Image (cartoon, rainbow, N blue to C red; front, top):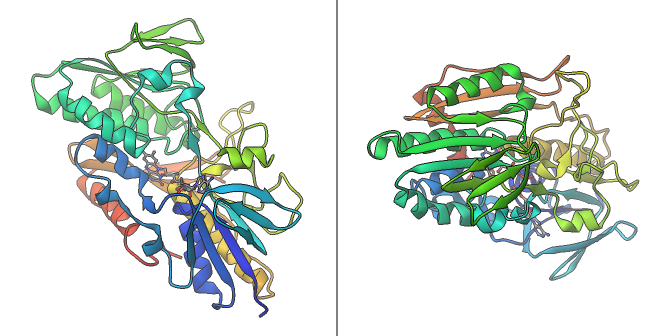
Length: 397
Ligand SMILES: Cc1cc2nc3c(=O)[nH]c(=O)nc-3n(C[C@H](O)[C@H](O)[C@H](O)COP(=O)(O)OP(=O)(O)OC[C@H]3O[C@@H](n4cnc5c(N)ncnc54)[C@H](O)[C@@H]3O)c2cc1C
């Protein structure tokens, strides 16, 4: 085998999974480099726990270098550009040549996309935001909490609903009930819309049982922090004492500048091979949150669906592209494809969670099956998080 190389930009769920799987499949002559601008990997699911003061950043993170298999080089650097003609990636530290390129840069969060939002809102979608929110919640003595989802898509569609229920449990158990009124305002038509009406109704029922108000199809136009008011496109408004937002998501500027995104704002890929469709250069893949993966099925004829953004999918994408690259390097026909299957956990508070398994390429629409919530599924989620922080090869290849 002549010396070839794969460069993986982004060392999150997808990047680590791709690198470790590829390292297992190919001999050491094939160079593998993972580039990420930050030194630590962390599990996004732990951010609600940071918000609630149940975990620290150290509990949910680990240096990336420790999570990568021996023989994978980690370069801590910022990706600054792509030259597809020369097959190179520019970083703040060096320029890397590649035979195979995997783009796994995730989604950037941009509170400034909505006027007034950055100044007024807290968020648990970033570690820093969750850390800032923790003492605010500890001191919260009652009033209206608005959980705002200004736009779609956003990663981990159950997360804001889970956060609402965990907050309800926490604030309800602190003192006399009824002091905190929680309401969710979302641009979505229903919770976890891609998972289907049954899942949506299930979450709505869980919210209703807790007295958490749910307001769908509320597209935010601006936030007036001084008046503690959110204005919506339909002319309605919401008043709050504490505003917690899911920041609008966008593809990192470096891929937008490289014109890799389509009008949806994300990188279009072949749904099963993850090859990038916006350029005609071979051996360029995109995986995870940064992609737009169209789904074949629909619930309504006029409403196309995309694969939700979640770590489990980024990881599965990583495994798929690693197998395909390995096959090509070894001179074989790639056969591995992404099957559209994944799962998520929804914590309900009171030490219970529900796991939902989804098959998103099914026809006539995605299928999602959930179990009856219990403590065992919460333990499952805790194990899932812990497994991702075990080096090396904790993320199954
Ligand atoms: C509150 C919350 C709860 C969640 N819970 C779950 C859950 O229970 N299950 C689940 O499956 N998913 C969950 N997720 C979603 C999950 O975290 C993401 O979907 C997942 O991280 C996506 O993986 P990725 O590899 O595509 O991107 P990321 O993991 O975001 O990795 C992208 C990497 O690229 C790097 N990067 C970006 N731009 C540059 C640049 N220019 N130069 C260098 N490096 C760069 C970043 O530093 C980052 O490390 C949750 C998310 C949140 C916010």
